[in-house]
Image (cartoon, rainbow, N blue to C red):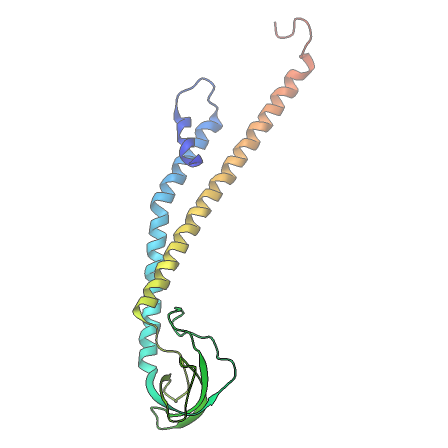
Length: 201
């Protein structure tokens, strides 16, 4: 709002100073940059982020495979709170010792977080492994990619607007300092004669 209000300094006024006109130009440029550069940077950053994450997701889908693990016994220690997609739509409630076979035929054994509080020997669990059978998170979902890209775009756009507003404030602050300096010089020149009879006549 302050940047927009500065545009009113364009009005003709006998008391208008040169710095007032400069401040009006700065306000106008700031408004244009926020309206044009902000959305442009947001779109560009969001597009680049989405492209990079899509490439990463495709790579994950090529090298991550769903397989089935068989529970050997339940573990009663505290479950690890982890969510592959970073979306809290499911929370692990238990842990179990299980065995599974990787896509390369290798056999593996380890502790798994499960969404069941009571795990029994013989239960079968779906898990994700890499090409060597090691446990990994599931590949990123399209909605996860989109959410991250949108957040990156909004963040970049907001950061651009903050930088523009900050730059304008710095320029205006320098203009105000120049006004004070000129006022001090004018006051020092008029000071010796201030209050003397006939001064300025």
